[in-house]
Image (cartoon, rainbow over all chains, first blue to last red):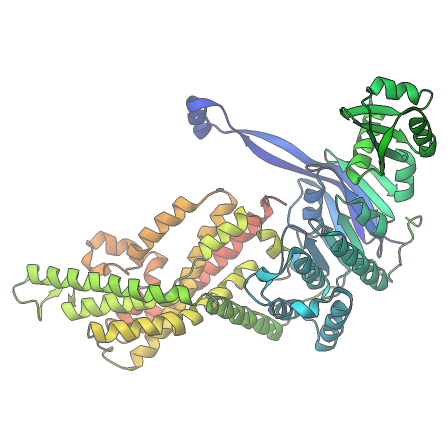
Length: 337
Length: 293
């Protein structure tokens, strides 16, 4: 099976101007500016077959947005190649963009001052969507996203959640083969997030759309993507199944303990002696315990604590995507040294 | 990559696709319509504009009346730079009426789109940003014609007793000439906006443009008032196609074939600047650094 998206040794350098200090420095800058290269993406390679949904994860500044911008044809890479279905995004932009849908969570592609429906009518013209397909898609979007209610409101009067639903519909109106989602659930409340995820699953699995998704929200990845690619400092650090990622990171959990009487981290550590639990004091009565759920049964930790101390409250949290990413970064750093 | 079971689609190829000529016309007409609607939503803003344009023209009216009175004993019948007082007043009025029609802020809009990174949302769409912006400018001017230029004419023409052209067919040619002016003006603005790809802030450039354009286009002062060398220079620049050519057509200063030559010159500049804009855009986009997000 030939891959739809082929990325080979993709590299992007940005040229930054470094300012000198002081007045003299400023004057020198005018005559001879000092530049330095920042390598935002370095030798990134991967293949994505048609119909796959891939989570592309990294911390801020890791290079994920830069990669997405090159894949969507906005940026030209310094070196390396990208072909999507035989097209080079930044060279055959007009041909290529016909087949893709893009949602940048921070921006909107809808016409700000006009009613939502005007944007859809324009997109229908831009992508030459025939009347039957248009009607069918709009009906589908109304069923799954309830966009029908907002069609005659100006975009600027929509809430973030409503706008995001309309933006998703706008990106999929022309039934693109590839969908790029950059933080599609950013700033949305729990219910809105859930709606967006359900919609994406239905549409993308149903129509076999290939999806590349960047997000900070582990929930997005868990519910949508079987495969994740983790990038840090411009390089790929992990590319594989989500389950493998979990296994590799372990099931690290953080337990917050509220005590009635104050205790030091040392005292708590002696209570959990023999178990690999790391204690951290947050403030007098509140402590954090971090441990791997595979190695340490949570119930054991709780039992020991309750036996020895007067505990007023307990709370356990799964790690967010940031912590998983940090763990991957930490592990790859260890392998490198 | 069979270890990642996704629903397999039959092919790994994106089919070639071209927009037909009819579809292009339909699409760009749609952009004209949308721009028209967009400006209609902000129409209140333009009512104050009617007042300020009237003030501009009044200022020039009194300035030129005083100038003619001081230069020659009998202001009626005398000429300066080949124009009589009533012709100069007509020149000024028609210039500003025309300006209220072709004016747009493409340079500033493009600069904002580039510096705020909104340009990314344009680049992911299968159309030429330059062409889209030009047709949006046409839509804006369509709005201006009805909601701005006509009210200004209703006020200014009777107020300063502005007469018609020597031949009424010149109404048509003047309008066509101002439409060509719109294309030239929007393309110069587009090229200036492209500077924002390389210079982070082009506010200064835009301010310099605002001032110098009104001189170089001949809106403020007819070229014939300037020294010979200045007139030689502006003949080689595109700016005369924005105001000087349409206004002199209106005044009947281009008899016979000179009329067609002037219009052809405008067409040539419009096409030339459009091609230049396409090239500059292509080069700029390759080096684009999209800000933010």
